[in-house]
Image 1 (cartoon, rainbow, N blue to C red):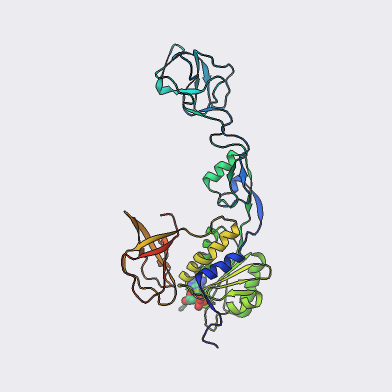
Image 2: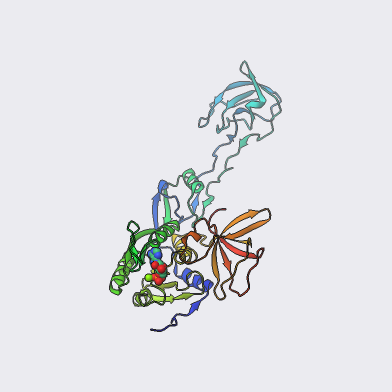
Length: 405
Ligand code: AMP
Ligand code: MG
């Protein structure tokens, strides 16, 4: 049994480059507007017409002719939104108009109710209107033919609103990547069970499934397999049969029951088997002949989620067709001393808070790779470069933002 890994240690950026080279959208499908939330557009979407199509009042008031010398006008009638006037407005007259109403022919300004007194069917303007006052001109919001949403755009509330506005109810989106999640380990029991002495509840399967769904993927397979070669191989092949991406947890280190790397060697090509990264050095990435991606995440719960965050999430987002797959990066000042790892870049879980001029970063306590509590509540990952000297409070570091602050 060799005591030194046969796999070359790759740097984070090289690992990411290899992964992203292999990750590509997996197809396109049409979904109804009401099912488009969180999906990524597969095509540019254009406006089908000007919006508004006609000059429109932006207030409740009186539609008038701005150049009219008179300020005491006969009110011809009332126009509500969606109705068109039947007679043109001529000098000396006005039409009462509601917000969203299309300006009657001849008018070019709206004086709001607050600036008008109406007595006996006559509107008395309290000021001389300006051309275009309170009028939204045609095409102000959208111009017909204009690209309103670009391919790769994530569909959220504003995007759904725009799709509805331009009548795009059959929405072309990228298909979600299908993911199979396999937790490995003889010591694992299902969460509803009480672990026997030495056992642990399988948390990674559920945490990783959730992370995959958060990254836009569809989980099509999930299981727990014991550290028995034949069982593992069967589960891995089963997962891969229906998925675009296989994600395993555990069994990738140097132990005698760490069987994932040799099994991946058999069914795929290992692109790398170790990363200079903490937590999660044994992260393994392989690709199959059909172009499916396999990630062997380390077993420790923090290692599996943080390697997912840094390496798997960008791949899934790219497969989803997202235009942007990396987290935003900011600078922050350490709120306390931090001791770096001597050889590997470390991604410490932290909370960033805004302190007048800058973000201040405080880690979430003990950064042990078994301690899930170090992720709960974190809104950033600090990228701590390796070194032998303590980084003192006040040192500037870079952070990946995990959540909106
Ligand atoms: P391994 O990478 O398989 O050697 O696992 C490393 C550590 O992570 C061990 O202490 C395991 O018990 C723990 N671990 C592995 N898989 C899981 C899991 N699915 N849920 C919770 N802990 C796990
Ligand atoms: Mg194990």
